[in-house]
Each structure stands twice: as C-alpha cells, then as structure tokens.
Length: 221
Image (cartoon, rainbow, N blue to C red; front, side, top):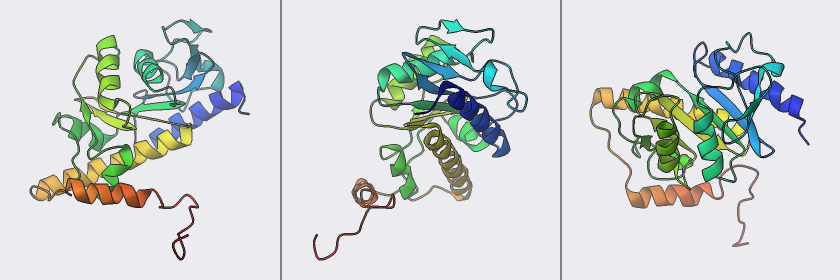
C-alpha cells in the first residue's frame, strides 16, 4: 500500500516531470491524488524544482486544509472531479502550449486521429471559459468531462485529466498535448478529414483487445 509520504514524493516528481516535458511552466498547473476523504494536492506558488514533499497540502473536498502550506488555487477544480467521478484517484491540470493554443478556439478536438477515442468519446471536449480558481470553473469542467471522458480542454486556459493513478494522468496529459500539436499542424494545412462515427466505433472495439498483455483470440477462443 502506498504511504502518504510516497504520495507526496510522487506529486513532487510528476510536477517536475511536467516542467521537464514542457507540459507546464514555472508554477502553472497542479496535481493531486485522492487521499482518505479528501486529497493531497501541490501547493500554491511553489516552483516544482523547489517543491518538497512536506509542502504538499492535505485538503478536504470542501477546501479545508492542514499544515502550513496553502493548496493550489485550483483545489476546487480537483474536488469537483473527485466528487463527480468516484473512480478517479488522481487529477492533473496543466497548461501545455498546444493544448492552450487549441483551447482558444473553444471547440472540441474532433476525431482527426483514431487516438482521440482513447479519451472516452469521439472527441476531446472543451469546457467553457470561467475565471481560474473559481467554483464556476470547477463546475463547468466537471460537467464537460461528465462520466465518460478522461480529459478535456479548458477554454483559453489549458487542460485537465483524471485517472486511476498519477502515472496514468501524466501519460494522458502527454498524449493530449501530442494530439493537440498534431491537430494544430493539420489545421495549418487546411481542414482535416475526420473519421466517421462508424470508424471511431471500430477503433473503440479494437482498443478492447489492444495491448496491456491481453491475449489475441486463437481459433475463436
């Protein structure tokens, strides 16, 4: 079982990885893990390179926190997702360059590539704009992700991903930024030809047996 201190170390590690991979810069972005009835979340205004495990804030889902370090200003955003998605164990909000650029269109990322299906639908949705750190932002983002999506863009802001653990939400963030970069490049050349609903349904069916050590059926077995 993962200890509290190991969770704190992991939050520091992935905060630094976001900087190293160009998924965030300086103190932008925040990461959390579900912990007890609340969460552990990165602190407000501390550069990941200087961040220490002891500075990770323990926060209840109504905003109460323990310790001497103020939690991220986006704690309500994380709390809203934990309330709406009981299976979510980690949340990562970041400002990757291409996700931010695409988010200014205030449009979903459509099925220009089959890997869009990996986020839970036929598009990656974009949450409406709301002021950073506000309850309104938390509410509209949770409503946009709903019960099926694992990530979304946030208009004129960035992106957010949820998942079963920190490694998964980091990988989803990295993947979404790659797709946003590819989509931006495709749009620069013209209007991409999109996959149809039928083609995306085939993708989702194929994903059910793709990777993760799943055996390929032999002789119908």
